[in-house]
Length: 357
Picture 1 (cartoon, rainbow, N blue to C red):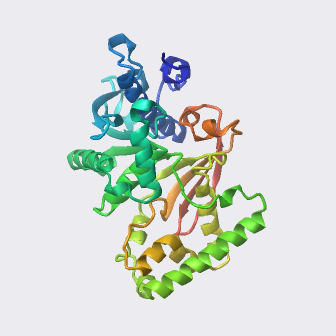
Picture 2 (cartoon, rainbow, N blue to C red):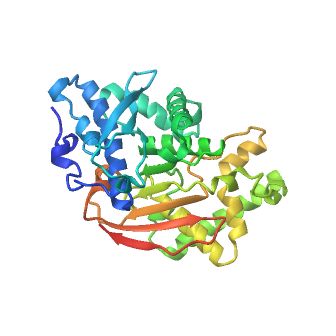
Picture 3 (tube, rainbow, N blue to C red):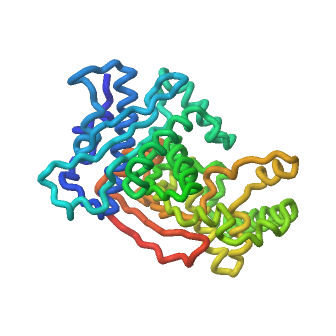
């Protein structure tokens, strides 16, 4: 039996009868709805819903998207992603479409249902071990991204994902940056695996722990890799090059899976303010675990969650429980209290803004 949360008429953003593509709230709501549609596409498959029983189409057709193709895992044959094409009616004027994408590639997160849970948890473990880039699911996703971008260019494409899906979208976005492609990305509740420092209430203790960690990591980086990395100019430094890509991250402080992004970026800002930005920029690119692997002669990819730039939106609306704080549904609600900040560790940090939808 379908849950109320799967039914667009009961839980979807019905208030968005007309989309303003230049509105942050509208863009966020549409992207989140397209991600939700991927969850429902897989639920439709699992429940063998047919014809009038399917629940996924309203989640994308309401915004004039059509489903171009499913992205199917080659192991369990679950639907983990979708490619949508924006097909506005002829009555739409061109001005009202400014800022709209031509295609959106969206990825769901872990689905707590028997038909897909085992494979999703396997991918979660790969993510924790920083091995998502070696999975066949990611290769399928990456091929879809490359094909669409090759067809229409990076400026006409959005990436979107939730939880595990946001990690997939982030990895795809970072991979495309290496080819000089910068795709607009909407990453909902992205995982950040680290000690739960953000849950410490005492701000001085929190800052002290982060400061000590930065100094140790930066020191180990210099000791193990020498000054070569520190002296590389921006053209040679892949992490600096990545700073031109500014994905949109959406996190909730009550979501322990992704809330560390709040402290991660705020700490970098504080380090810049006290004149320790150089230490932090060095520490930001590495983890102690990765440095130890390097010392043992084992090269590894930088942890997925380490990014130099982001537009970080924090949902300050009180959450009743973790499930709500980590859920996708919160991101299209019309009455949210949000705080958005733009971070770029290689440039001056602009002021934050608080918005209430």
